[in-house]
Length: 250
Image (cartoon, rainbow, N blue to C red; front, top):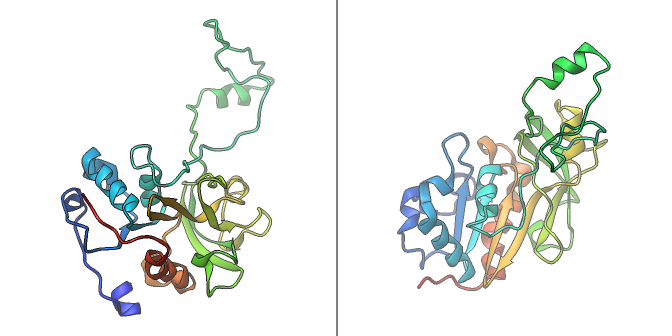
């Protein structure tokens, strides 16, 4: 997308080579979403993960494109985005079968056979997946990543990954999904998904040392036809290094 639509040269590198590659001549590292092909952590290992983290702290700008890449930046070892993936939100109930601490569990009354049968299913804490829906997100007009865009953008969201917003003392939530009644721009999403996605981040930015970590929780370049997010993506690539120092490695 960067080469064909923007006309700017890029250097492609295999993920496994990042563990040993000399990154001193680069100031931006783009991490595409790994999809179902594994995780960055499993390929890079601890050494490669720490190397990317140290490169960012020395002045590099890393951009995660999608939930899988952003999850890698938020991993405990990577430690570049102070967020985590959320479990499915659930209403509190009087009988949750939780451990009381003395080896027993809290009691539960089944009023119908359906309630009993439902209780037999293993609990799935993953939020309901969305199967490709356009969602609206509001932008922080005062942040440099949002420069040149209107107050809202549309993003194509798939999967079940929902991230917690960054705290004010950690970083910036530059693009945040709108409220549950207005977040869907087009398509279908389960009510539980839209309720939990509301006011959660689409785009985050966090400073570490002299460098920056930027995370898109949904791929801004999905199949290269989501042109509405191009400006945010280009801001990350070209404005990011201007807000960070020159990257060096030991």
